[in-house]
Length: 440
Image (cartoon, rainbow, N blue to C red; front, side, top):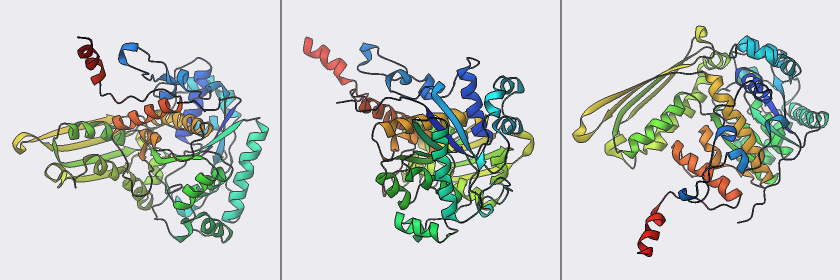
């Protein structure tokens, strides 16, 4: 196979709608790494290895040495926010990172000032945006495109990725205006309120051929119009909602239970979270969006219709509670009622005391870098290989999503091998033993 991936020459701009806890943690982290003050733990693109060839060859390069990813020193950050605080001020308010670390990159963070955001309070009722654009949907979309082009020109950027780190929008389902790009653009001109703010960012990015990553469970690019636009402009898109805390644990634990054919009667999940995301999710309409994203994971892994004896009666409940004292320190509890041989019952309890933005920042970085790679590799439309990072992977119509994190990792790694002209790895392993038999 040939390697047709364009090199990562020049600078990469990462433009972020929503410069809150996740975004500021990402930006401050990259700046700290570039200064040699810390390490990018949790980022597969920076710390991960990939096996090439047979196990006996012992070829395990770092992923960033295997595929031509943008260097962290070549990234320029910018973004939009409903508040006018610069990134240093926003990071202090988010209270994720300690003051000592923030002060060590203070000058770099203060230099990043948000552009006015496209905002509609009806989609995030608990937020009061003061630093926002005015005008119709079409005017705001056009302004966003100008923002992207101006940012690229001002900073001398070779490429740009748009990375949504904004709040969860209210739950709603696609309608006629979302069915194709002609209807969508007519909706923009008519200022159709069924076009969510996040869709304006996605439209602006994709129209310019800029990859778009959705870190929240919003509908955004999961509509036919955006899929059509992504294909037309040959631009990558992926699923939605960074897979960080409780759902990450589910995609690790549930595949193990299914692999051993252990039954599950019930899975109760509850969370407490005190940051801006938790505040937004305190509204039932916004929580519904998150709930739908989180509930689908176990259904796809256990496939109760195919395994009714094991999972046909499984009861799955998800709760998120806003609890200000915890701030960004999200805590989740899972009670899993399982059963084994002869139907005998057992339980698993998981108490995950995690840091929401600490887990999300490296995921956001990886998605931005891999989306840029996909664009340079000529891969357009839905990138299912990036489902490794997402609660709700996007797939072709009628194709079930794969939520097993180990299968997702295999898919990601094999995509990189394919991209670079290396043999795919099936992990079958029979060839090692067949060679011995043939030699006898």
